[in-house]
Length: 431
Ligand code: GAL
Image (cartoon, rainbow, N blue to C red):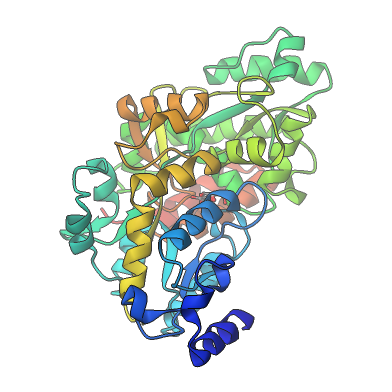
């Protein structure tokens, strides 16, 4: 409200020019200068990136945008909660009420295409891609993830890797352990740690997606990329013996987690590894942003990383993208923001802080740490698998059902009920 009032006042007094260059988020709309839309129409950027490990990249991107467009008022409308736990519900009710934010975070893949695009809520951005010369600047696989029926609907700001096992270097060194490459090795290491009284695996499933994140990695490691992908098209059934095997492995892993897992969120669970209270953690590489920016840990010194057991050569892809909802009052301003977000400069401002790698193929590797450089290399050669927990593999309704089923399974550990629930939910997937 305060921002709106100050923008309105600035306009009324005709002092927009005088304000430009002042504190960024209060900058007023000076239409004459930027040729942008109606005065006072702020650029509302909707995401779930608030707080520890999440917001630094976004703030850097907004800062860059405001340096370029000081006269467009920006509102950072982030709603807290990992993986969009709360933001997605807020977004849904706003979209239903025809009150879309100017632009919002949405995962490439089903969440975008089967969700907002299928509902007729998004504008195509083909013209922007052409104007910015982006068609050969983003990997084709990624453009495909944000396209439906020949139109492109959003701009990827990053690529996160989901199949990473983070580990505490000191615990591993003190106990003469090597990070596990297979599930068998994982259980050998876990038994040794448990015998020493160290929690082998951190979990923080206060928000339901976190357990799903672990489960999808076990699915990928057990089924392999091709069959894992076929789960989401219905070509491989959840009644397949390989799925049962994955569920058994997942169940066994749950014998090695911290007792207070259901009261921790993803950051709290990561903290266990940072503080040496747990040895390993399966999480996407937003954890690296959290470890480095917030906890001031050093890559490959305080913590190490390897692909989740059995997933070497595979890359669980998560891509955060932003688009242009239909009916916004400032589409030209939104496109300006998307152009910055999709530029090399924008991606290199955002990603080194976020823990992700740039979505563009021509970003500057020197801006990234060892982890980032390695991940950029891995992305080029790995088999790519879409994340379920992070919206790419299947529509939101299915993800919600899986989240519920996984969380019941974590407490009840009933393999048959879990598989039956997954199989019945999967009947709604597109064949
Ligand atoms: C993912 C998102 C990431 C990160 C993570 C934790 O869904 O793609 O950027 O924010 O959730 O909140």
